[in-house]
Image 1 (cartoon, rainbow, N blue to C red):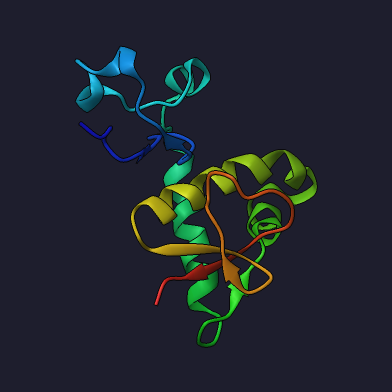
Image 2 (image 1 turned 180 degrees about the horizontal axis):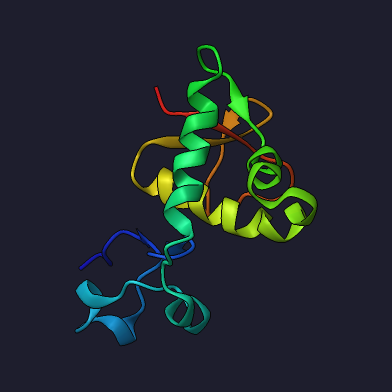
Length: 123
């Protein structure tokens, strides 16, 4: 029997791959790590998702937005500390099928993307 397909973490949006120890509990697994289980999705997360979508809606056609633009919009001078929450919000939007994460114009896996990324509405 083939293992079930990966599913996104409820907090960070990274892919959770099936493990044998989760065979009985796979349906209840929602978090990729103890850190995400402790963090859970907070009230601060949905405004980030809304801001990403709002910034993209202001752009023409299939234009993209940099996560740092979103972080600067909410973080002001402390925008660097907001980068990972913005990336987490973007990965959750990818998991919902609303957004694509692109590098060099190509869609990349949200869980494994390293380096500079851009966010684009899915067509």
